[in-house]
Length: 492
Image 1 (cartoon, rainbow, N blue to C red):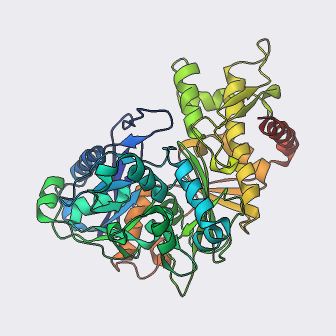
Image 2: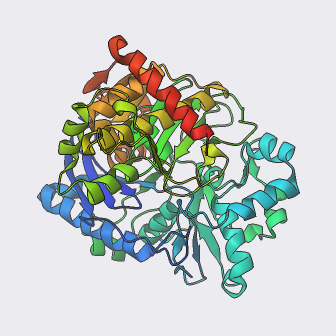
Image 3: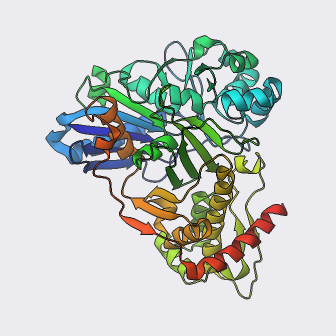
């Protein structure tokens, strides 16, 4: 059987087809080839048109089909990964009522804070394991107050992956993990939080039916199959938010295992079987994809908004046409510590690890006579690694200890400088894998439809393609730079 995985990101939509037996990726494509448009008509806003997701999904699947030829008829299941925390609101005609308010939109912070104060910190942390924060529920509260006429026409709300599945199958379904991602889930009671819904004034009717992440959630409609060039009746048998799915793609499913990504944003995601929370709500806890009431698996997620986007900004504005490999090469010519130059990478909105402060990106210690682009490139990568260390220190308080970090061979993890800085400053060994979210979603589809009898079978062929260990001869220099970076952070 062939398995199709789809990853709905904020920059692009990627599709991959793997051979279920060997795990080999047979076809892969992403669209658009640059970046998807993010609508930001006010400061702190970030919206996308769900139709853009669909059009780019269709283009990516068509490219995969062209690569497969007649083998496309062997596709037997579909899995979906999607950008977390977004809000899609549809009317009774199942069409979006407005653009999706996506993950990096910060307009709803005060709505989450109001709910946190109204419900009380004890309730929120013991039942929701999070502050309502700036997640999907708070975004819906913004719509309720600021667009009341539109709010009254909402039939169902959903996450981006729920919307794509609905377009494919005609079924409006969400997942238990999805409800927890939106901060609708009561961990103490194992269901939708009535207190949160009542606090915001939401009808329970707008929440879709919930199913497990690994389960058949509908079948590809005949008309949609024709549009996509796929056989009709294929089951959609897996869905998860991008970070739980990234953990799945790296076979991070058991307590103590840790996954990391460093794309536009940076994420550390650790699995635990303990119901614990950060009293300051700087990290977030969700149901993991393999959670059951009998075998609890929770994902503790730490997000840093400003990571790879800083590297991208530097490439566009200071790179003079240089590519990322060139930037990495220049950065490697500079010694650890960047000759006293420090960068705080927090220039992409409010940072949860900083208790929802938006301090912006800071560059300190710049000397016009000593520093070049190479120093700036290294200082930026070190600053991103230091922000990961800052987050891991927080996560340790919740029982997550990252002695081994698993990551895909992509984005910032392609940089030897970043990998060395992260390993030296955390003491962790880093294992790199040749996988990504779309391939993980394909494996998830195989588990959900029953093709694989276990996750172990699904990941039997997944092996590390690279390892980075702490370089003791350079750790001292990184520790000195980390201390200076920490002093800079304390000063803002």
